[in-house]
Image: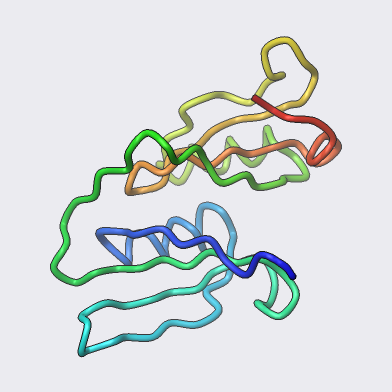
Length: 135
């Protein structure tokens, strides 16, 4: 077994696709519409769905706002150069909510960025990704 994808509901599919492809450098793998249920799906990732876990963005056509709630934490993405990644993200106008630096009480270098719907994305410096819990 393996994890296939994580799904996020988004209010503006174009804005969200632009964020994940331009700001976080993912590739739009496929997109489909369901007229009967009035939603559009977009699958994005850093590799093909057959090899990697991807992100599914779901846009329900009639919904303009979602409550993220307090049970969702974040999506974590490994980056080779976290400082350069954060600078590039800021240059594109995205919101860095925690600047790159060591996690409190540890040495893992992390940062956080917020997507257009307010979902948190944790960036983790590559040498530390997967080695320890970053919270």
